[in-house]
Length: 124
Image (cartoon, rainbow, N blue to C red; front, side, top):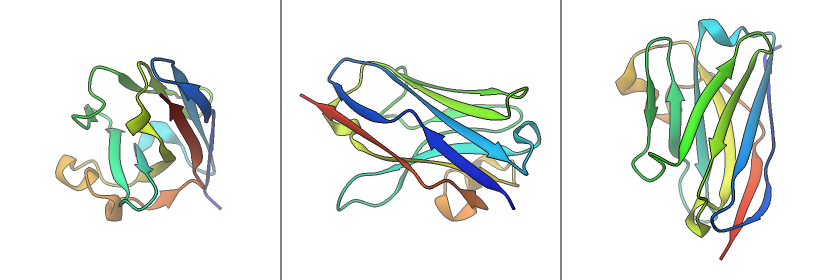
């Protein structure tokens, strides 16, 4: 059974950094598209970034501050988050998708597997 397990969330101050991890089991991340989403209270789940086999994509709100990466040897994906802002506060989810079509990877419904989420809280 495929499992994605996020870790690395926490409470930080504005301007700080965090690195989220997403460890995969029963799934080889080098052969699949991976993404990060987030959901703030009262808001819809939104795309943060995704990584396909040939490109990475970032939401405008995080571009230049967040970096998505993978360590295939550890079968783990990361989200390095720098210059955090209070509006980055949300539950962050990692997800995996079998498609590599960029227009579909922007949609949460495209993803086949999801983690349970990790809370990120940024205080001002």
